[in-house]
Image (cartoon, rainbow, N blue to C red; front, side, top):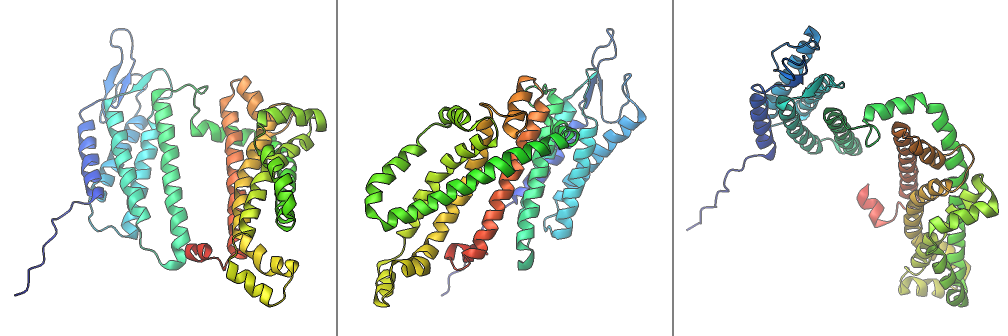
Amino acid sequence: MSATPATAPPQIAVGAIGAVMALALLLLSLNFPVLMQDVGEADPLAPMRWWQVGGPAATPTLLLTQGAAIGALLLSALWALWSTPGAARTLGLVALSGIGAGALLAITPTDQVSTPGSGYWLATAALALLAVVGVRRVARLALPSALGSLSAWFTAGVFGAWALLFWELLVTGFGVPRVLLPAPSAIAVALWEHAGTLGGDLVQTVLKAVLVGYVLGSGLGVLTGIAIDRLPFLQRGLLPVASLSSTVPLVGVAPIAVMWFGFDWPSKAAVVTLMTFFPALISTLAGLQATGRLERELMHAYAAGYQRTLLSLRLPAALPFIFSALKVNATLALIGAIVAEFFGSPTVGLGFRISTEASRLNMPLVWAAIVVASVVGSILFALLAALERRVNFWHPSVRAAS
């Protein structure tokens, strides 16, 4: 007598729950004012609902934009209720939500005449739910294996776009001062208007201080690690000194480097060299000791000397460790160069720009310099990761990721 298989209880998709909640919030927002407009002392902060035009700031264009916002968001919520999303339906949901978000951002008050009402914040909460549903569906798209990396990039791009959009909505809606947190649009304007200045800062900080110090520090760390492995007495004498160098605080060594090497980029390169030396040294030593005993005995059976064993066995086995240190050093080098510029530099450099403009309360330009530094650090890390995949193609971690 065969047992009847148990039937799993029906489960409601998380996306459907989010779509239902978003639709409920949007329908509820229709009964609340989207904007509160100050129309005079007799009738302060008169409410204006989605379908109304009132107050001196209300125009047919504003009414049309309001209608586009609530219409696109309502259509997005109904679209999200589709239980079997495919690629076209998912992209349609993202597009409709984006149109609604753009229209909602267009009616966000940027002056002192109007303030967001309850309907605006209910619509914003509904938009947040629709964004979560859209990102989840984009991440779960079944694409061909050839487009696997493109799918990951697209998911990250959609998530980043939503993060920037909500940053803009919240900062503008709450009227956060630029001194505390500028909106992404203000940062983008600062990037555009000061592109030449930031380009000069990029050359000074990255192409001079960071690259020179990174190559010197990482190269010396790898070579010193090989020397310590070859000469055991150095491990007892040089390794403690190298370990001590890693504990020197950056804020203490940066002014000394400025006194020794001057205010220009060589002093910053010296700081970067000191910061990147120890991670490369430790990773190289760990990688050289990662080879197994059987592999070493095999090389010994073939009468291979230390140099042949190093080049054919131990150094290739250490490359994954070395690349890990190189990727860590890519971010350390950029941070070290920027912080070192706080303690004295010529009138150029990302660190100089951040410290100077912060003292002037020009925060959009400060954030623009931070964005440039972040993008450069991400590019350096991505280039090293791509080079690692080419060099260490044989390693299991690289083969599993590909």
